[in-house]
Length: 159
Image 1 (cartoon, rainbow, N blue to C red):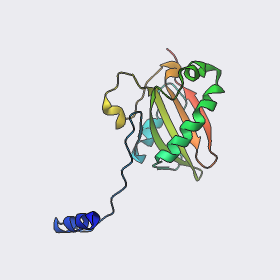
Image 2: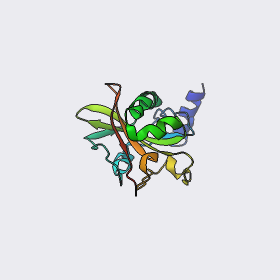
Image 3: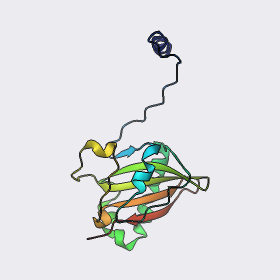
Image 4: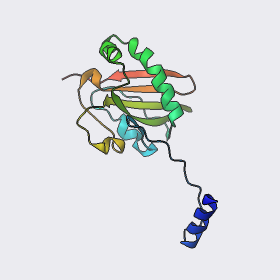
């Protein structure tokens, strides 16, 4: 009934055509899924390798984000330079921005991780965080959705 009322109200207000609303994803305090338009900016990292952008973008959901986060501890444990992160329980304690990449017809999720207690304002929820240097406190992860595995893990350089 509420949906019918909303559709009628939009028509009366001159909306022209009624378009189904996109579902709103539940907010998370430590993560945000950025829109497809932000892929190039998130991948434009200053002091770490990032994946190639590919031929398109898509907007992942929390299901894909959670799969990446589940695969992350094992990928971090395999990297000697990440021992500190593993000891600290990463990804807990880090915030992340997620975007979707389409490359060679495959879907990937890229995550830009940074310390949750950093000096950022709430702008990180709408603007990509780009930090030069910072060492292993800042890292990026690419996750192949179909394969269910991390395909790239890169850390920022150190000054």
